[in-house]
Amino acid sequence: MFLHSLSQSHLAQQTRRYFLGQTGLSLGSMALATQMGGLPQAAHAADATPAAGGVPAGMVVNPMSPRQPHHQASAQRVIYIHLTGSPPHLDLYDYKPELVKRTGQECPDEYLKGKTFAFTSGTPKLLGTPRQFAQYGEGGVWLSDALPHLQTVADELCMLKAVTTDQFNHAPAELLLLTGSPRAGRPSLGSWVTYGLGSESENLPGFVVLISSGVQPNGGKSSFGSGFLPSVFQGVQCRSKGDPVLYVSDPAGMDRQLRRQTLDTLRDLNQLQALEGGHPETLTRIAQYELAFRMQASVPEVMDISKEPADVIEAYGAKPGESSLANNCLLARRLVEQGVRFVQLFDWGWDFHGTGPGEDIRDGLTKKCSTMDKPIAALLKDLRQRGMLDDTLVICGGEFGRTPFREGRTSGGGILGRDHYPDCFTMWMAGGGVKRSFSYGASDDLGFRVAENKMHIHDVQATIMHLLGFDHTKLVHRFQGRDYRLTDVHGEVIHPILA
Image 1 (cartoon, rainbow, N blue to C red):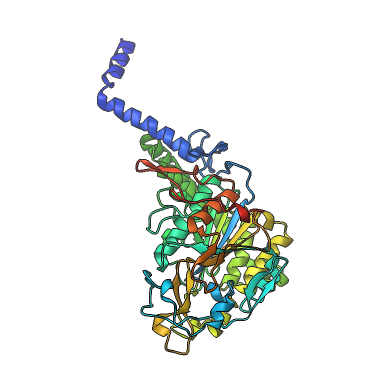
Image 2 (image 1 turned 180 degrees about the vertical axis):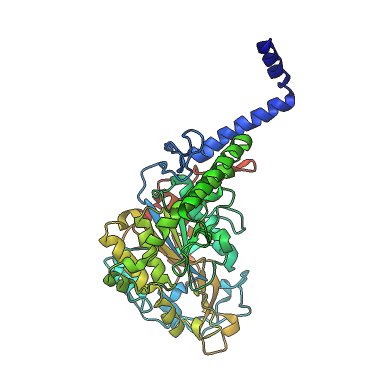
């Protein structure tokens, strides 16, 4: 009688609504397992591990567990230094003696026809650099006198001197550079990397963001956001002054044990929700809570640069307790040393229009470079001394370049500045599988056009992913019915720069 009733009850549930509901949950669970335990179309993905905190194996997996890429990687981690506003590459890296000779002449029409500039109209005057240039290192890398410390590490640099982009305004250009699209909503480079590789640290985020000079990136948090990827892959912004991470500390009156009990209860509730709804963000939330609990102990330790030897602090020009690019460069080394996969540094103040003394490519550039030249050189030397540079990819650059002529608004004054310029500019890389003391690509004699070996932003992105072991066309995520990737439908690996 009991068995018969049970059978009837079971059959009664086999309605179309029940079937579709159960099928949806099953498909959702399979998709969730794919997303959180492995990689769509990523070969050799390692098995995911259970999340921390006593979660039963097989039910909740750790989305940040280390995974294998498509092929053997040259770089295991990345430190990306983004100079927000875009430095004047013609006054730092790309020496043009012909442009210097023609300073003050009207810009030829052939370079202006059909072009739109952010703040310049009419016929501007050509502007050669007032800086002094020389070649350094075995490869004869050109560097200006604004970078005396970087000159000492010229043998580590791989210069990309013919980079081009599609955008000439800051926010869309920064988003294109860091997310592959000029519009907000796509995952950032750091998010794609941690989505593909996971993290080697159990107690720190896989993707950490450090900001100096007091201003957020031009693209806002979208420049380090996770877009449509699970939010566990977004950059975690840390600070070198005050609490390292906002709101990570326990509330007043809550001790460590009570915090653990609270998280255990939240975990149990979220597990029930995950079983019922199968939504990946539910499991992401569990992982984030557990990571935050561990970060409360680990982050203050790794963010305390006062524990470094005095000579190391001096080499970087760092000052414990303050906020600066120097502090952040030292923190970046400490973070990657502890297994953080991707560290993104944003430093504001590189928009050299010439609208004030601080934006003059003479004294203004000297002062601004003094805040980055020493710490970046120290970072490269420090990584080399610790045996980490060969598998740590360091990247430095802005979102576009600067014009070979004077900016229109300031062309009649005594302050020298340049407008935005997307057609040709310079970035550099070091370590992580790129050639040392090497320059690739070239602009023409006046710095207007690519003369050889053009590299689009998508090519740079494809190369970064290749160095990390990925075929950029196969690291994808399905969203709204199509597969997305960092490089969209573009990008070719820049093979000549590979070591």
